[in-house]
Image (tube, rainbow, N blue to C red; front, side, top):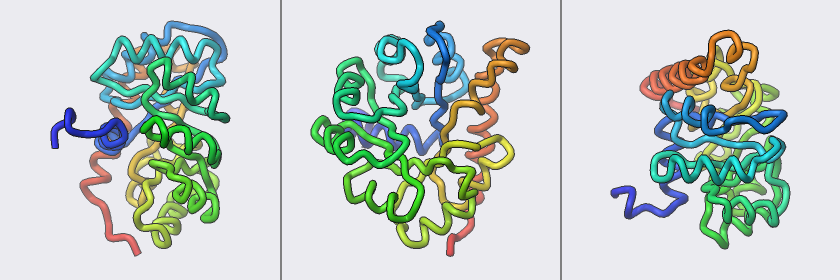
Length: 226
């Protein structure tokens, strides 16, 4: 199936799974969002997130979506209500991401045929997200349960798409994938401002490349889950 024959939901899911990452731009003040987005794109990212806690998030989503139209999908993170989700969609956002299960946001995304990665942690929350219609379940905070927790969830929900976020690093990303995650997400692993100030924006590109390389290798060596 060519991309032109796929729905937006199918395209975003495929892009997320094929790269294995969804890096997040999270800033405390307005900045040159395009520069960060380009650095992530150059590293191989094809789905990125801008958190709604970042000043100027809607403008950033609109600018990045326009600049990379047809090449990279832009998600809005920390979306807590359907009104915000609708604004994101109207500003060109291709994906809605929640930190927890918010049924009316998931419902709105369904009406607009836009993918939604719903935050959840417990088995009950994951089931609630799936039942509400979430496209993927963002296990947050991922480090709290650890990589093997992905296996526990996959054992009872084998069809679930898990994308852990929070505490994911180059050191543990492969283990999360091998234990059942289809991709990983995060902000600090890709937006370490100390490293960016010291090494330049190229550090972001190299970090994205490193994550993709590690995850692709892990996916090529997937063990059989229990």
